[in-house]
Image 1: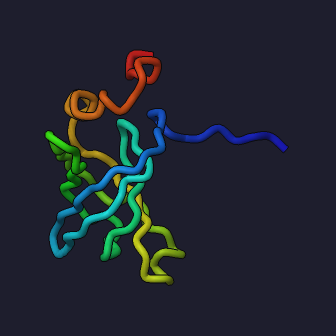
Image 2: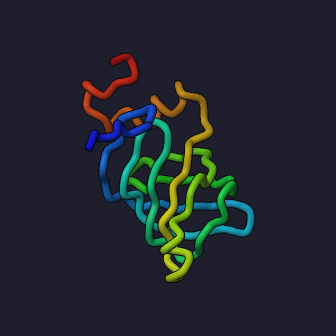
Image 3: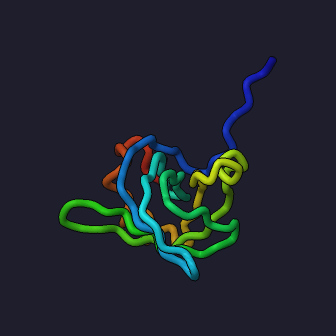
Length: 114
């Protein structure tokens, strides 16, 4: 059995950060459980968003919050059945904007130039 390579464009980092998600008809707090320059995995919001929903994702940090425009790209089917929130977003800001905002979360070896 061959091991499949993950199809992600950017390296992902596991984390646990508070966030707020705001969009049309959607406002909830949750936790980011993994993040990359391309997007994030989110759990624990009170509402379950619909795929395709555009959100303003705010990473709630002491001192300086980070805001990223995003779009919901997947919602866990198990989460839908259980009334939980487990979903992923892709970031819509330009790559330069994302890198500038998120560079503090990634070691130098994971920079976009590598």
